Length: 238
Image (cartoon, rainbow, N blue to C red):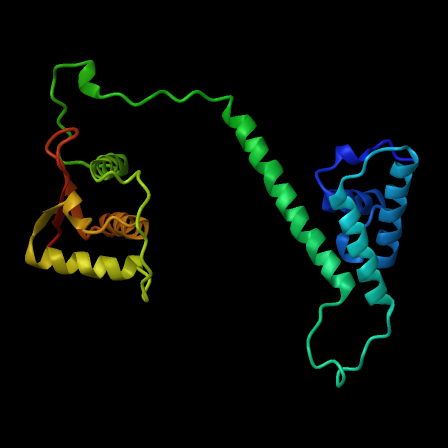
């Protein structure tokens, strides 16, 4: 008998997945009749050892038996079966495949969390805490400067609070937003970075930010800042 106990599994699907792997089979190759018999046999061994079995395992056992009975019944002809009904065996395979993906993703996140604990992140500090000299950047603005400016803008707007969402018929796109910013710069040769954020929905903020980066990348605009932490200006390139 296996040394595994019910408590070693996270639920019925975890036990079923273990039985499949123990049989050295792929999920796509399992047989409903065989896996059901293995599952029921496993629960019976637990009962013989006088171990408590969680009700969810018993519920799954009844579902497997019901699926097995449907699988063994004669299949109606296509003419008789006007409503589509998934094959019980395929239904079980689909459930196991989805659970396997979920379990693998959870394990990946656990690994990432474990690896993250090996790093220490220092809290950002202002440069002028260590120097009296005003840092001149000669008008050069990096993506990090834009992010810092956006962060401050959102903090002022209390962006961290839950936002009231509204349903719109048309989704925002970077392409459409770029066109609108171009039109603004046709009227005003230069504008403040923060003035382009007329709305504060998550979608609008993200699309606007990406649009600005795209225009800067394509040399449509120049980003200027007199000194560190000053207002960032967008200026069109003629």
